[in-house]
Structure formats: C-alpha cells, structure tokens
Image (cartoon, rainbow, N blue to C red):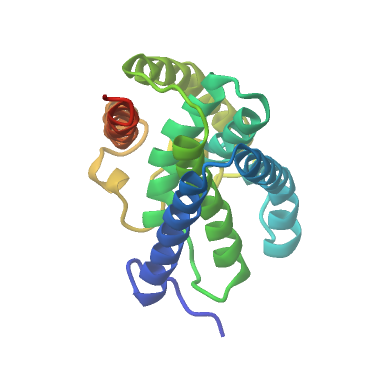
Length: 244
C-alpha cells in the first residue's frame, strides 16, 4: 500500500535535504579540486543524463503510470530547463545556461517544494519525479560554480522576454490539446495545481496570468542574487591572491 504524499511531511523534508546536500557537496568538492578534465567529464555525464531522461520520460510516464500522451510532452518549465542546461554543457552557448538557470531555480525549485504528487516514497512516480528535479538542481549548482558562465542583470530581461514570447505558444498548445483532455495544463496556465502552492494566492485562471508574469520576474531577480554574490566573492578572492 502506497503512502499518500504529505506536503512538508518527514519523507518530503528528508528528500529535499538529500537533494540539497548532494547538490552542494558534489559541486563544492569539484570546485576545490580545480581540475578541468574532471569538470568536463562531469559536465558531459550530467548533460547526457538530463537530456536522455527528458526524452525518455514521456514514454515511461505513459507505460508505467498510465498518463495520457497529451500531458507528458517535455514542454513544462522544468523539462525545458533541463534540456537547455544539458545543451549548454555540450555547447557552452550561454543563452542555454540562462534558460536552464533561471527556469531551473524558479519553476524547478517550486516543483520540488510543492510537488503535484499523490503518493510518497517508495512510489516510483515519486522517485522519478525527484530524480529529474534533483538532477536539474544539482546541475545548476555545479554549472554555476565549476563551469565558466556569464549571468548579468541583462540576463533577467532576456529570459523574461523569452518567457513572454513562449507563454502564448504554450497557452495555445494547452487549448489545442485540452479539447480532448481537460488535464492538459502546461505552465499551469489553464488551472491551478492541486494542493497548496504559492499559485493558490493568485486569482483563478486565466486572470492569474498577469500575476504569474510579475511573480516570475521577481523570482528571476531573487534567483540571480546567489550567483551574483558568489561571483563577486570569487573575483575578490582571486584578486587577493595577486595583491602584492
């Protein structure tokens, strides 16, 4: 018999702690090792696993969990962030890091804290859910501190514009696929997620969309601060080594 998922229950909190600890320890050890070959190898492994998992996920969700094909397309924010970050680790094209970072530290983080799950561990859907989201979180931290990246304040504007341009496309996808399945709800544009989340504070769809846009931009700003502070401290530490 499966255990019902309990928001901020013991299992949920333990899962978050394990993800956060792993996501800090592995990048920190790698950063201190300061070995370019290790960084490249880990980058390649993370990229392959992230992209492969997102491409395989729709199939196992259909065949293992009985999900309808219309709701498993890899176009949720978290899915796109994982694919984008994987592409960055393979190509080093910075805009893909911006997408992976900002969408991953906002949508992905909220998805881990307030998941849309019915059952808890050891349910396979719970395990695969947190595997994918935890892997993205680990990859963001690793990439931010172990790989040469460039995030600036203008990056927030760029990602906000990209998000706004994609929003009507995702909305139309929801409408088109929702004709045959009312559960279609990419980017949570059509209805609120089940359970209590921060989105519960907003008006009912579609009137929540303007609030969602403002909320997303605020989250982008907040998520940029840890990166900005770390890079400032790293630059100061690097400069102090040559301050004769």
